[in-house]
Length: 386
Image (tube, rainbow, N blue to C red; front, side):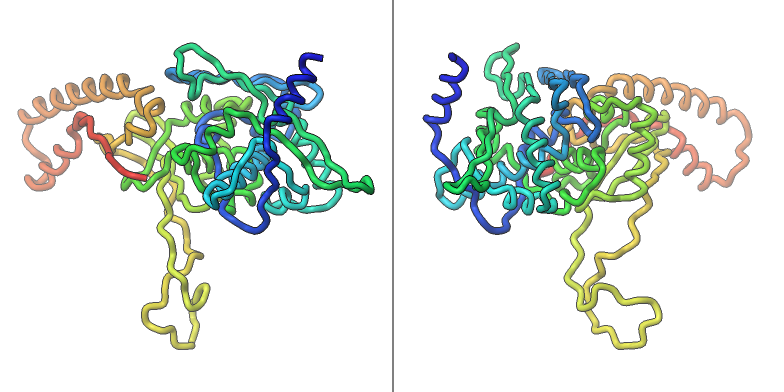
């Protein structure tokens, strides 16, 4: 009875917010993009997600009846965040109690509108409601945890004739407060909803979260990405799938690279794809006889840049410390130690080589010595802006 009274009390204190019609930008909460909150597989997952990095801890639990909420189920939360931000920007009153027709939700997230799609939508709502999260993110007191479900409750509404009249849901306060904060919300490309792979979707959200306008892009260690994903697959399988994503280049707005450092560490690097101009024609096939006006903008259909880069340089590019702290500092001490050791060996070898007659012309030898001598990393901050 106490739980029932509490539920009715919460509903009674909230104003009903009806979903806005029309097309508008899709928004996502940065906390949901940066950390492992969802299953990346459509298969039934009950095993919890446990993640800890620095002062951030997350535990996601599921019930056997429904399984853990998936990254496809999170599309409903993207719809909710987009509605709240759009209404707030228009000067309208928002609320955690939201109502919309299944058609409105399904169309926004790029799904079909058949009866089967409607049944899948209800199953997704069940998983969101039954999945519980415990996290220290955005908690004012150290060691404190906030526990919630992605949807407090949901129900189907009917009209006077008993016909379906919409879906009503209550989103949690933890999520709602994040969406109301401009600094915690990012606009995402609507092509995101076309990504079919769970790892593809997760990687796009992570890249969008970290990939601002920094000149040198970003890079993550493969093993750190494996931990950050919360995936159940072993590391070797995870690394294989990452390499396949780099080969396919499916992420809208970003180009991915595989970087192999001199020490053998494998990194995933990514940069923003420069926007292509609006061409007179989508593209001009080879051998076209017709005149092409001067100044025709480049086509978006271009061959992607090479995705594999073997890094033989000894320098370390700027690690973009401000927005990627846990990734960049995880192996920092080990990198410095290894570089110092290699520098000492190289200097010793150079000293021994001076005693023997040179076998290469002076200019070429100078170049080779410069390339062989490691440079110790400088603690430079990128200072880029989003």
